[in-house]
Length: 356
Image (cartoon, rainbow, N blue to C red; front, side, top):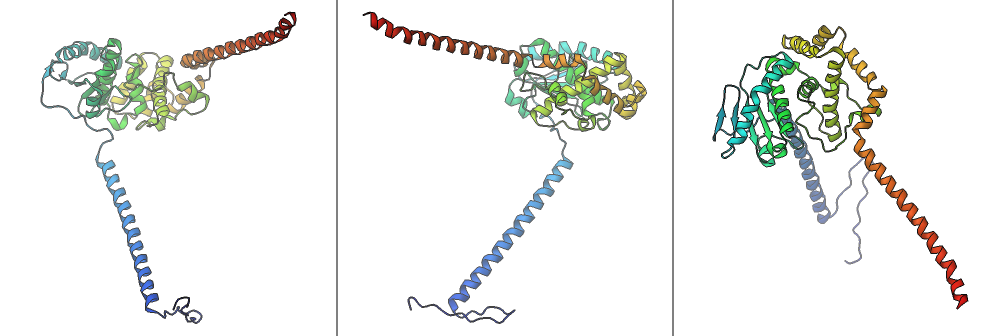
């Protein structure tokens, strides 16, 4: 009846609560089914997460970090004794340009490193950003090298009309191929690979950072520079840290040349190519440990000359700040003069009315 409540019998201590009505019994079964379904869902979700983790781990183990370039097998190719250029139809002039530059670049690299360019590299120019990315390129990069395949991929849409930049980037990628040809990738730290490639190619690399100023000075001032061990493998993906990794690699190798002379790099590369670990190769060539050199490099960055370099790296930002400050000061003076002028007009108003 409406308004009536169905009494439930009390259960003894430690016993289970009794169920008096069929309706209550059906609700209890329904709740139990819901709990079972929820348990099944949790078990299924846990299994799927573990399966996904296992699949991801297998991919990371079995697949290389850098994907191989999707080399177009069909289409024209320009082949010389020095280089092979794969180019799309109608782009023979660019292929000729690469073929003409290559002999001199390879000769310069042999002279700088002491290594022989005893293989013929393949260059694949991409004429659009989308095509470059389809071949394996990444954002903020204008080129990349695939040492295992002896290939270089260039994004000509970024620097086709900048001859000096084009030459340096191509030389930089050739340097990667040459170093990996003679030194096993497992024994070539990334910082040394990038540092040497930048040192022998006018300080340029394949990476175009988003920010215009250098970040090494800022990182040194805030104690954010990486230990060399952290730059031995893959570089970080964060924009600031990635730019810092490139700048720090260039600075360290540049300081090696500054301290020990131009022939030092040849000696270091020769020892590494002979099979010595980089730490042992460095100590053999320099007479001190790599850790001692790293500590000395850090100390040298605190000299007044290095601070001038840091200021120079932020010159555009400083100029912009100075211009903004001058604008604010000028506007403040204008506002003060205007208020003074308005005050004078208010004082003169009543006097003019009194003479009428």
